[in-house]
Image 1 (spheres, rainbow, N blue to C red):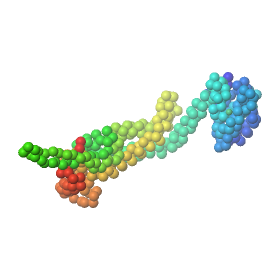
Image 2: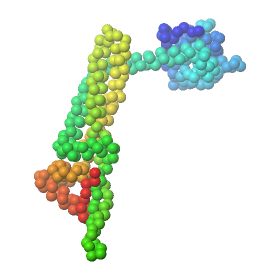
Image 3: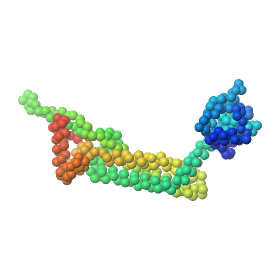
Length: 328
Ligand SMILES: [Zn+2]
């Protein structure tokens, strides 16, 4: 059996010349189960080099690889083998394969450690970026709430329902009444057509919970950066908890950015479809004022009521119906 990998320092080679410079290195040096001693490290080159695992027949594997392992043999000489070749040629029970498994873990752990050190090296910047992102999310959420609360409870609950269902299209019903007489009695019959007034973008920004959880997560990471400064004094468990949080830094900042742009898309919606989300007159006049302004007409809310009536009349004419019903 080889030396336990966890206790030795694995080398990493990023140029073939570094391996060739090892005193024990010999080209085309056959590796088999019997002459294997230990894994020295891993290699990754731009170019490929042929694998030196010895086949049962005696010839070398010869597969070209640009990444794999550097092994020391019992006679002290050094050779290379391709990344997956130990499993393919010697099987999962072989000492080589088991050592490679341990070495892989050590390699991943080291890479994780390096990434963590890199993040910690930029701790001050990250703390600031997290603080900024938290502040920006707060402003973004306020923008949504100001719009929803500014219009009213019916409007808010309708938009929240739409966000939950994921159905973003705003539909109205155009109603046409046919009057006729039958057996001397006058009768009427309604025919209804559905019409899509518009579609709302960025609806997934409505859910408030995601702002809260993302902010809490960012706050935890920010604190983890601060805690990391005195981490040598902390227990192993606490240190790995801090590391786990810090590693989430980039993905979480990315999510915050995505949420922000979702909010921007929502706030960028045309107000015209908003006019058809509720029957509430006062709420409708508020969004009508917005829609009127977007269409280039300035005026009071009273003015907007008339404007909306005119727009609706125009829509009725276009659809060939007598009135518009809010579809809920
Ligand atoms: Zn091979």
